[in-house]
Image (cartoon, rainbow over the protein chains, first blue to last red):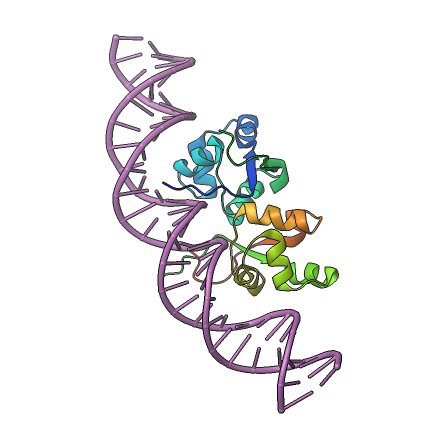
Length: 80
Length: 80
DNA sequence: ACTATATGTATTATAAGTTACACATTAGGA
DNA sequence: TCCTAATGTGTAACTTATAATACATATAGT
């Protein structure tokens, strides 16, 4: 319970990169040494990974962090 | 005890950006809504902030995450 | 000397990231 | 149909990020 919302909403296009490379969540997870649950959580939405993990993802996908992750202003805290 | 090392070492040039803007740790902390302790920890070294916080920093400093943070392979011994 | 600012360090407490499971479902191929 | 890979969902345990606070110290200006 109690999920404090961060100031910025982090969205990502990880599934797009995965689709381009045609790799499964499990493959990606093993490649960057996390569990599949972590990949699911990231792709699933409101999830704020560590910067180090973001770097590992960007490095593996041969791109930069901003190409994978975008930060949006959180226009309202209580719109749900 | 038991400090699992991340796969990548995250370094940063936050103090350089601060120096350029001539702002104190406390000013920066307030601007991005963290405590000064968090700024000290980040500048101090082996510290892995959240991606969301990295975005807040980059946004405030009018730059991108990679200009502030760099990921190095962890070459030091006893890896794995 | 005094004062205020800036930084480093430390401790405790809470929030959140991540793992390691398990179970379910869906889509495809043989 | 059966089998398998891929994905979604959930939860408990563990680790780490961050907050809140206090204390120390150095430095610059008065």
